[in-house]
Length: 119
Image (tube, rainbow, N blue to C red; front, top):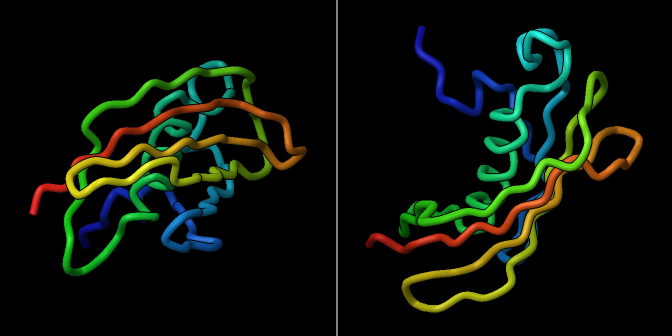
């Protein structure tokens, strides 16, 4: 049985509009690194997915062209939430800011994603 990447990480869509999105992961052992903190790739994947969710459409395809991502605090348990906000959108590119917070609303990471329209 095959899974897509979102299913593998157990990413949930909480809310999505054309200007904002909120995605969430309920953390478990598979999300942790060897030090029992959330693996950095989980933070980034959740943020990248939140950015992409704003642009998700069955008629258009957008991909991540570039990103700048900063880790601020480690997270161990609970949930991880990504909040994305559209900053700018043109015909071919857009910029989206994303913040990642834990279940205590602690800011864990921030990123800016530049997306590219490929069709």
